[in-house]
Image (tube, rainbow, N blue to C red; front, side, top):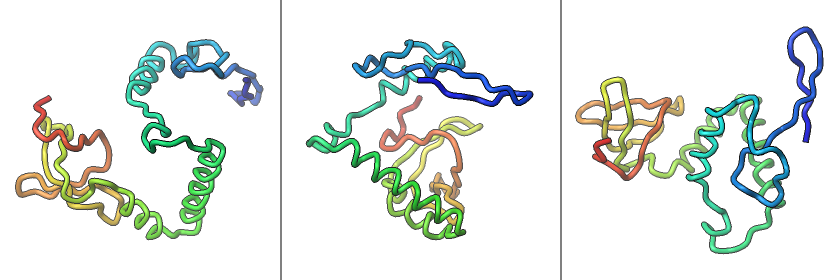
Length: 153
């Protein structure tokens, strides 16, 4: 597969798109990524260990074309909410799907080290709220680990 890019000076360059997924019968592209190098390959390898198979999670075979179509339709609906300024609809949907955003034990990394607390919801700007000791923390970025409270990393 090839893609056309527009680098500096308006010249178009055609570059191959490489496959960086685990061995797959449909993947006939090179097994490296010349743009990202080893660092990107390492990140993709780490992500591959975290993957799941939707069929296995659901316990049944799914129609992949339907999954793709439904995913694109849902993405389109949220995109139109964003364009139309319906931030409340986006936030309501986020809250409804944010499993573990209330009452879950979590830990996260901060500049002060590993912190722990109990989730208390999502604020009006989309931040995860966590009660840590007597402080309500707003987490807007980073890695939050659910259900491993006190892992002592």
